[in-house]
Image: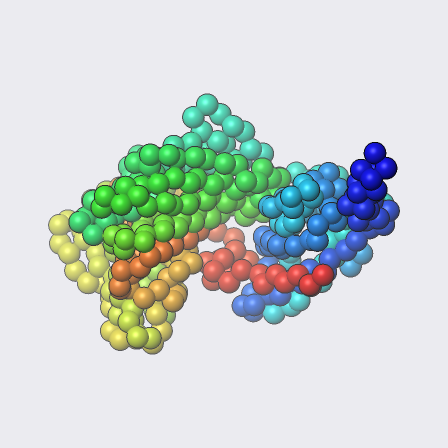
Length: 391
């Protein structure tokens, strides 16, 4: 018995000592793009030694000595149950190229601030409601509803799609072992994670798909990755059926020329296609109105490739679409929008790959759009740089 007590004291002593005094970690935020930010989402990933913190340890985030709202989510644990890694989610408002220094404190004597208002998450029978957005548990349709003002989701293809080398199209509903986990419940950030396996060209192909929403912005970050050891995946796409009110709708793409136009009828379409190779990129915008297809604008062998974003604006709402991989992607980037609402973002690599990723932000904003670049596509695609001092 004495030996057992000695061993328990020896192994638990780091936790007991830690509990007597607060510990802290320095977190630094840098604005990288010369854009003033307002309550911009940021995440710090903190690693801790064994026994330093439990799931119930009080914690807070300080800026200039004042506690600011933060959401702390343990992401991994040591064998003894103590926290090994955690995410600290918070909002920051740096000026252009400004740096801010935060301090994350945890342990005895730390008084967390009262939780602020933010996202609420409700688990329903066949869906999960996160704020103004409803996600299907089956992943198809993925976003069953987006309602900040009027309903912005219509009927049609809705979710991630995998196309194999034979042209067969698969979606999350085709997974044999689809699972959904709520990773973060808010109030500052809510994250859902879908996992499963698709049978691609006869080969079991695992995938991961996540949907993430911050409370301070009206965007949805949708990320998918597919592990394709057999190299049978031809492309990865996200489809969203938009309902933005009566036509015409205005569209524009993030080219160096700020290419724009209108969709006047439900059958009208506009497609942006960029093919990148060896540091150069060819792109073209093709419209189809009344059955007549024509190139509206093109840029051959430009060294100023596509910026990775587009807008489509109806009478009451604007949706900005930003593609994280577009800037450095080797292959074909294609974005299509129809007057009937069908929107599609697709990446097709230049050569077969063992891993495919696609990350799309869909930012829903009511009109008239506020002037400013605080949450422009350029800002979304240049997130705040967050670093954590080593222990």
